Image (cartoon, rainbow, N blue to C red):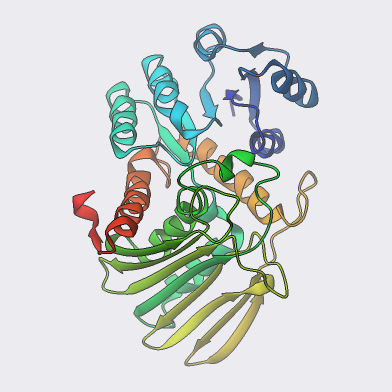
Length: 342
């Protein structure tokens, strides 16, 4: 198996998880790093033994010609970087949110399709091992046809200390966290046709919304509720656990606190402990997300070698991003928004 050579753009807070995962995966090596902040660039290069360091992305890609580029920057920079990679024939994996606008996202997908290069969005929540197992149980069909679902993420965890910019944007929880929960809803229940949204800001020290409740109509005929909060103080802080409820005609599935899965069907009720493993470089409570980074990056490598489209391709992620845009539109108007209108 030929070793794949990757390059990383963006050496910020979350990119360390990506670098650790690349180091754990066989058959891949990050050969170059890029960041406009010289201090962050040096620190990442020293910590992971990558001597080729650049402050200019185009110079890095032209000089090193990697097999793929991992874009770990913030959304406003994504279009230029993805289009740059496409122009050079370099496959790209891009951090979420994919783009600040639907127009940018569609342009990025089109650029990569014209160039014939793969594009994947680092939408890692659906790659959490408890979510993957839940989907497998759902596919067994023992609860019958689902008619209701709920994807819930409620916490008071201080996400601002590690990512202070989250407190500064006019958009917050739906764009940063809700996008993951909405993608899980798509992964479990299929694409949505409409969404109704209510948002609120509880924390007076931030600009954007920190609470959101969304009702989705799915093409398959069921309804789901996606609710997110960074203002919910609980007896037990569950960050970063996503809780899921699914009701079917013949039973139900629950992914509850502590990664406890319960399935009730004609055979009775059974339980599974879906606690994710603690990787050598991971730390609690982030280990669930950190494992999902490893799993999605493994999937990316497999798709590159097999020549197939990633599950979270740029084209697939247009549907998730459209849900985010429709949620904000609906919160402004108070009305349901059809996804066909986004």
